[in-house]
Image 1 (spheres, rainbow, N blue to C red):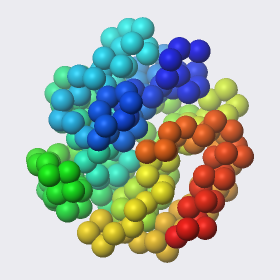
Image 2: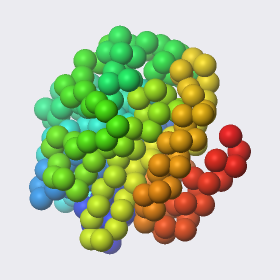
Image 3: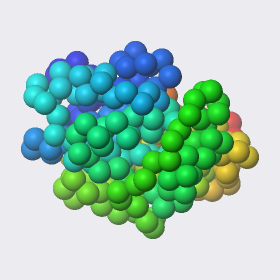
Image 4: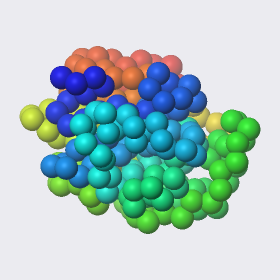
Length: 225
């Protein structure tokens, strides 16, 4: 298995040890030579993400869609550059779209980082509680998991008989400036547990490679909040 390959055609391409200390984890999923990227770090320059993706794939990336799991800058900072360099379409949930498209410094957490986040027009607005993702086949879907932010989503990939859950920032935090809602988050986590994922890819805590470890991580935060 190549370095940073989590499952067949699924790679970590960004994160503290892969791209920049401020970056949340970013993932790329390959669909027969076309890819979907899940989150894209804090930096407005996406060069490291693209270099890591090319190294992982063994070919120049053909990224069709970048899915933003929520509106915080450590997950979305590279989106505009990725669109400019690759032509990828940027997708986010309708309930986080206003903060992204207005460049809200509080809701995007840009003020935490002492950074600017220019308004980011979206190409794809994901609506409702679940659905498919453009640029992928029907093995990839999103699930609305509000709590950390109103429009937080998780991404589910079913491949080779396993469920791989990209559950970015399911640990929180829950703050008024993020419009967090801990009660809704608890319901979201119960929804994720009911999926019984085999692998959990988390935004800041890395990869949990068994069903038991994935469930234990989610439950550990349910016990704290």
